[in-house]
Structure formats: structure tokens, C-alpha cells
Length: 401
Ligand code: C5P
Image (cartoon, rainbow, N blue to C red; front, side):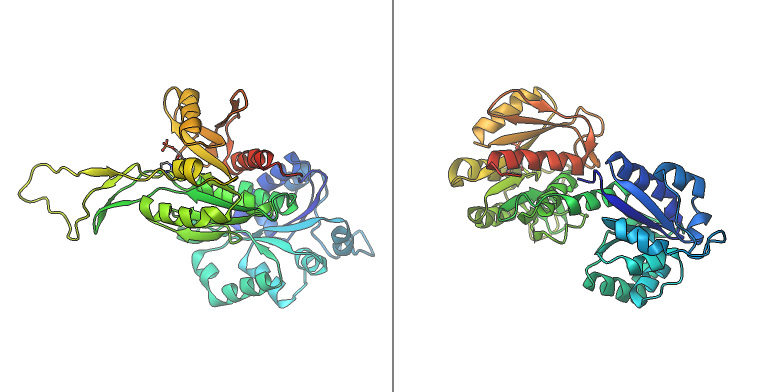
């Protein structure tokens, strides 16, 4: 979808600029052409030869180049571009963009570009949270510019928190989503994601290691293709795509209720949640004490199997896709799940594949359906895997692209 697209990549002077060359590579790998525009300060973090070699293009840096009497490059560059991305965007350039200051190559190009610009902020947490920066990003969002991130994590200044530039892959995925076809418009899809927490007492629960990343990536890909998405999520620490309706749940019983309510209004369901099979039979209102006992037995009772219920009892023409995480007899077990739960497709992840399954940003999946041989895909980002699952859903829904 980025093939043949002409992208302007604006780079400003923050430490995250060391990742900008990777963004260029990813864009080029997708078949886009890249025109870099950068500030003088960006070159303190990344060099011209790197940017020019990777982009296979000269970098636009100077509004008044010495060897040219006349230059309006900021206009001609924008005339030819399909999208503009600024990554990293420092607090300073965000401030300039929001206030209409155009005093260098990047800010004049931004002002001349007449479509929404993708902005990936990167700065120290205190700067990011400052009221001025927050006001500026709000203003840019209201003007329909598209913010990517920032994420949370370790920052170069020693702080940890919000302000970290989104990873290059995520940034490129956002651009790709922007150009993707709206093949699912008019369709409503229910997605489940994350773990469930089954309470033992007010401070303890039984849970699992699901991060929610796979289901959240699916929700985001669906939304980018124009679907209306209801994401029923267990407790996770990642943010949902703003285009998605998020229903936050905690336990399997809550997730079950939310799914039963949403499913009749949907054309399909993709169940990526790692739902606990059992919950404590008795919830203790008071914290269980360790005194006076050397062992503790917690009686468990079975949770409803949401996928099986939707697939075998509630389905009225909807497509239902489930996941299976297996350690042995993988395809055989996935087939059993397909039949027992009356799903239309099972997406199998193996815990035996390095980089696949819980917590990772990557996954290697096998699609198991009723028609034929299982299809195995190589290790890829969860966003790419999500796109494959959504392609399969489109085929099942018989959506015309
Ligand atoms: O049976 P198993 O847990 O391996 O099946 C996994 C699939 O079933 C996943 O799609 C998961 O979201 C779904 N599931 C469910 N409700 C349960 C257990 C699993 O929807 N109680």
C-alpha cells in the first residue's frame, strides 16, 4: 500500500533521530520513495551521508542554499508528495507547527503541505507533559494532523515515562494503514484481547501472561480498513487505537457478558483473548491470611467458553475466528478447536517458535480452516500477522477489495 507513494520525512533535532534512518529503510522496503527534510539540529544526531544514501535522494536542509540564487524547494517537494511524516518531532518543532512559524526548511515545508501530517513526538516526559506542548498537540490534532505516539519507556535523559518516539515499525504501519483500502467499511467486528483476571480475594487473582498486543493489532488493522470495531479487552497496559470502541473488562464472566451483548450487532468476531478456563469458586471479601496454615487449596470452577458459545449457539451468519496457543500436536489440536467450537478459522501460535506468542512484538502464525491445508507464515510483526488474519476474515466475509 506504500508502493509508489512519495513520502516527505521531516527529522528534527532529538536523540530519537538516530532511529530515522530505520524509518527510511522500512519505507523504502515497502516501495515508497523518501524525501528527507531536516533541521540543522537533526544533523547533530544523524549524518547527511546516512540520510542521503538510504533515501537515495538529496536532503532538503537549507531554504537559502549558497550556490543557488532562487529556491522554492519547500513548495515543489510538497506538490509531489503523497504524505508527510515528522519523526522525531521535538517540542520545539511542534510549537512552531502549532504557532505558524516557518523559519527553516522543515517548518516551511510543513506550512506548505496541504494535507494532514503524521507527527511522531519524542521528548523528555516533563517536556511532553508540559501544558504548552499538550496545548500544541491538541491544536494540531484539531487541525486533523495525525499524532503517532509517543510511547512510554526508557528515555535517553534517564527518565522513564511518556515521550519516547514510537518504534519505526509502528510509525510505518500507521502510514500504511492510512493508505490501505477501506474494504471493511459497513462491517462491524467484535475483537477480544488480553488476559482475564480471576479474583481470589481483594488483592490477588489468577491471570496469565497475555499482553493483548495481538488482539489490539487486529483491532487497529480492522479499523484502518474501515470496519467499526468493538474491542472487549481484559486488563492490559497498552493503548487501544482511538478509532476503536474499547470495552474494558477484568474477568472471564465480564468478558462473556460484554461479548454476548455485542455479538448480535456484529458481522464477525475475532477472539484473541487468553480467557482463563477456571475461576476461584469462592471469592473471599477479606484478604486470605497465611497464618495458621501451611497449605491452601483454592477450588476452581469452569468459566464459559465464549468462542464456543458464539460459534455453536449464537452465530447467525457471522464469521467467528479463534486463536489457539499450543505446545504439542499443534495443528491437530487447532483442528479440534475449529470443530468443537464451530469456528470458521483458527489462528494457531506455537509457544515452541522463538519470538512467537505472549509478550513478544512478533508472532509466527498458522491459519487452520475447513477447506484445506494449514498455511504457515514466517515470524513477522504482530501488525503484519494481524493484516493476514484480517485478509482471511475478508475472504470469509467475501468482501470485494
Ligand atoms: O480452548 P482454548 O482456550 O485453547 O481456545 C482458545 C480460543 O478460545 C481463543 O480464541 C480464546 O479467545 C477463546 N476462548 C474463549 N473463552 C474461553 C476460553 C477460550 O473465548 N473461556
